[in-house]
Structure formats: C-alpha cells, structure tokens
Length: 109
Image (cartoon, rainbow, N blue to C red; front, side):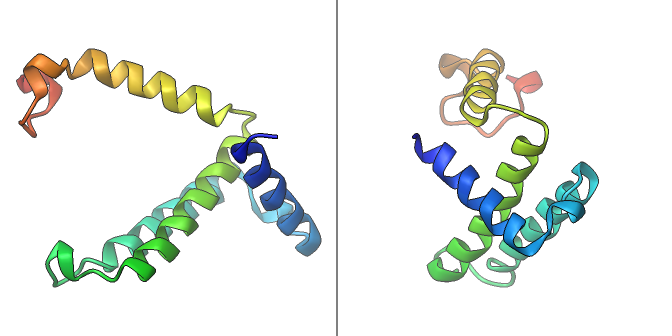
C-alpha cells in the first residue's frame, strides 16, 4: 500500500465512522478547501513569513490537504497522476532557462 492509499483509506474510515460522506460532495469539498486555505493564510497575516508558527502552518496545511485528497477520491482521480501531469504542464509553460530566478507569469517570459 502506498502512502497516498493509506491516507485515503484513513480518510474514508474516519468519514464513514461519522457518517460524513453525505456532506462531502464536490461543491462542499471545494468550499472547505478554500476556507481551510484562508485559515492557512491567516498564519501569515500581519507578520513576516519567518514569524509564522510552524505548528499552526502544519495544522492548517493538513486540513487543506485532507479536503483536497477527499475531493480527488470523490472524483476517482489518481493523486500522483494529476500532480505529475500538472508539474509536466507547468514545466512546459515555465521552461527553466526562461523562468529561473523570476516570478513572472508564463505569458510574460
């Protein structure tokens, strides 16, 4: 069993024990991801990046990832595959020789 499969199995078990699958439709999972991402942003509000508390970042990032994994599972998406595919597309949009050291968007390179 891969690490991703283990995480998905634990998420499924957790939700089934609580009968929460009924609430985890695509729309609500997308909203939950956004809300948890906002809580992650709050870790950095009014402070320098270095002053953010790593334990709070860890907690909020876990929430974002948990909902993202649940959404992928809901739509039968292979997490490894979609992430590697996206990385490949980003590599095409942001060739290293043009993007190295710059934060410009791909259409500005």
